[in-house]
View 1: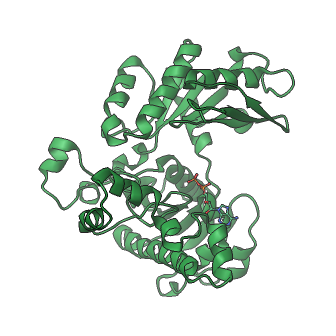
View 2 (view 1 turned 180 degrees about the horizontal axis):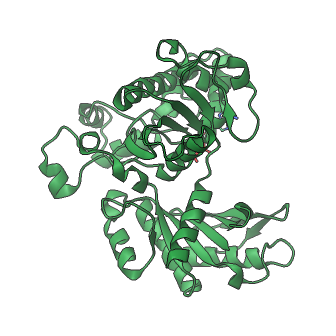
View 3 (view 1 turned 120 degrees about the vertical axis):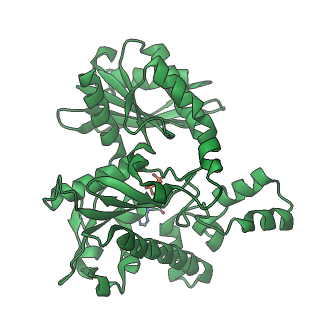
Length: 400
Ligand code: ADP
């Protein structure tokens, strides 16, 4: 079976064609500047890379460019569109409507569209991607895989805020959590790796640290708590997002900088985090370079980030009643050894011991970087959200 995985943003569309026999991507790429001048698609297959420039006024043209690239004689991966058995779409929000991936029936599509209010920037873009695909491939089964669904198992005490309960009952204000496909994937990989699959007591704290970062407490494969919140703005400071703040700061900043409410939210989403703190960059490679050269604000940004992550580690160990494993994943979690070291430093008192040498020299695949005498396994596990989407798509289309 071959599954096309689509992740549609407002002006972009990323894709991978995955052969389920090997679970490998046989083609991948992304279209950018959809709806703008100068749209293009970067496509990779057969060890070849090709940039296709073509007008893409809407996502429909973008999908057509992708399909043409996939069947291209020279740089394609399949001989005809008929080889695409199903399409899996990344959809950001499931609200409280779904606790698993679902087939994209008309009814489910309507429910997904009704959740736009909870993710006003992302959900409409995801929906446009599905509609464009359905218009071009009407007979191919399609599946929605949500960022939030994995966290639907959180207990009420973890998802309810300390505000009047009516805000939840009337307006669904609660913690939802994001990066669910990644937390699900790496926690199950960790359980497999440690021979703890199907163990209801296996406690793991997963740290998805990338441009956006979130940390989850997972027990027996179920999400018990997570750091991102009502929106992806909550939790630890990120590349450009502030993370958790005293809510009174919002009005204070709006007054001081003469910003509207929505400008203040943009400030917190796009201009804050380690980028705003350092004044250097949102990229951790740039920050370590600047810190090495004596830039205090860059060094401080790294420290603030590491300290916030460490606090979640302690909090989630408390919430779970201990931890068997800590997993690092995503861009920073997989590649930044110094950040990993700082987060777990001085936690020997709770059985967290890092092998610094192993941590500094990991290869591809899963790395066990637990130090001597460590009771809590520390693993680095490459995430693969596209594979989760493809597997769910296969599972649901086969069942149907
Ligand atoms: P996204 O959330 O956009 O999917 P990623 O998970 O790909 O992001 O993470 C991207 C971030 O990972 C970059 O902004 C950068 O900070 C960090 N990163 C990537 N590679 C490295 C590296 N080799 N060393 C340190 N940080 C890295």
